[in-house]
Length: 308
Image 1 (cartoon, rainbow, N blue to C red):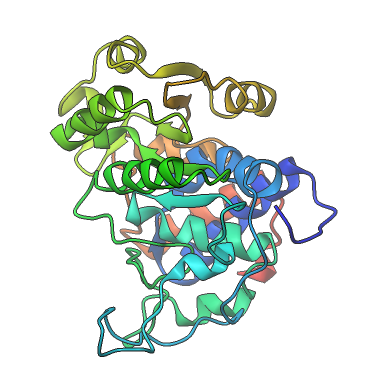
Image 2: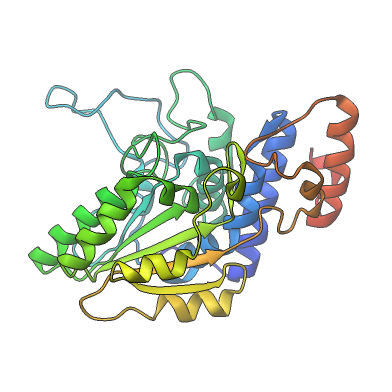
């Protein structure tokens, strides 16, 4: 973190949830449960852990400038909101692109992006996409369909290690990505090549598009499986900031670090339990349901209904 601020990490997490909630209510739906599960881990990363430079892109994001190519000098990636690439700075790869609104809210809360950036959310020709791509704020690479961020992050980390750069590579993942073979191949490669400058945080909220993961493809003993691939593995309460701090400092020489942050998809918004297991994307079936939800969650988050 390089932009001075007087917020506690708890304040940042609360701000992320409030921003995602307000945007979702104003736009008749959104990725609410991802803000519930990810707020603390993202707040800790942005407010305490990541070593980032000053943003290099405007606080109100630019329109989409086309895909990168030798013939498109105007193309850019959203990594500019994390500052310049430099040996001493960390790199942050966000693998679950559907967490984009949560990332945008974190960037706004940290002063890296203007709150009016969300005026451009999901607009034709814009870069503030609902499902983030490499040009979206905070996104360095396109990581979908799903589970491609760890592979790219590990490649960046390996290259940085070979060049002797002190900066780390942090990768943010969702637990559903462990249903993809590419994730396990990458874990094996990271351990084999002793890529120890990479740090991985996994949002283990046990939810996916089709419902609870246990009803789709259960992961079993995930900590044991990850550790068996040679990674230093920490399984913690993802809403416990002290546990997160300890885990972030538990890397071992010669081994990648994987932090399994066990979270709740309705943390801070208990009303969402009523929708279980349909939590991946929250939209409203009726005006009455919308009003009931916004009243209940606003009370939980301390949001004035007049703001909606």
